[in-house]
Image 1 (tube, helix red, strand yellow):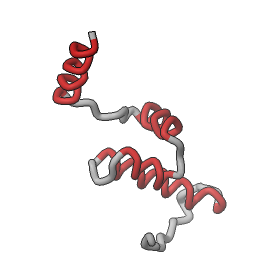
Image 2 (tube, one colour; image 1 turned 135 degrees about the vertical axis):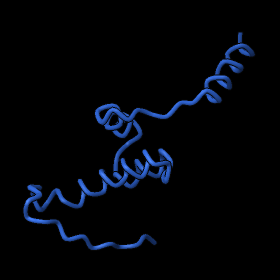
Image 3 (cartoon, rainbow, N blue to C red; image 1 turned 180 degrees about the vertical axis):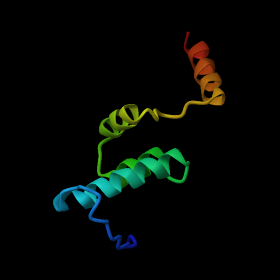
Length: 83
């Protein structure tokens, strides 16, 4: 079971009431994913998005999916083994 957090949104934040919860979840998911606190799967579930919707959101935000040198080397090794 998840935890519930109550956040008071100041009037200067112009988000329609019916969109507040969804937008806050998406923003939280993005930031926690970028900081490495949530995995890709955890973040996209928090945001309530499919894998592809979350990939598109990351691309739009300029975040992308982290892909480090170790993952590249592993992928190249697999490709060599397959060819």
